[in-house]
Image (cartoon, rainbow, N blue to C red; front, side, top):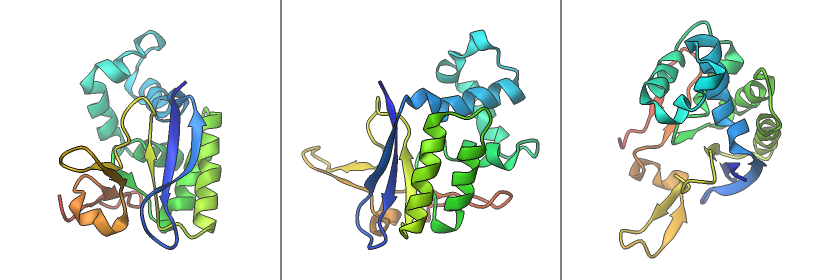
Length: 179
């Protein structure tokens, strides 16, 4: 079965480390997308396949991220779903609360919330996600020849232009200066 992985940059720095894995990735980000698509975009139960087959749904979800109708829990849970997002210490507890309070909740989301709270208490510099184990980890950086790889670190932030930091609701996203 697929799983969601929460990764973090330890207090002492260095490369990302695994903080926790949560079974059934479809009860993580896909659950958030599905529930928000039903509530705000009118997606029917028999149209669930559209979340992965119809690029217009993802575009609508991206636009929904700025919609004032979303609760804070919905907004921050949705923000965690985007590729290459990092969360700094200032938003970790907000994100943990959002995942824990997302309705209807799942054990996957609640487990992520617990791990994020522990990461914050341990002084992690940033957290991020590998949303589903069925794909290659987006934070694994391969050499040009493909023979070696290493995990992302904050020291390489400017060399990894896809990475960006989540911002407080209502503030512009903190896009990577290297992008």
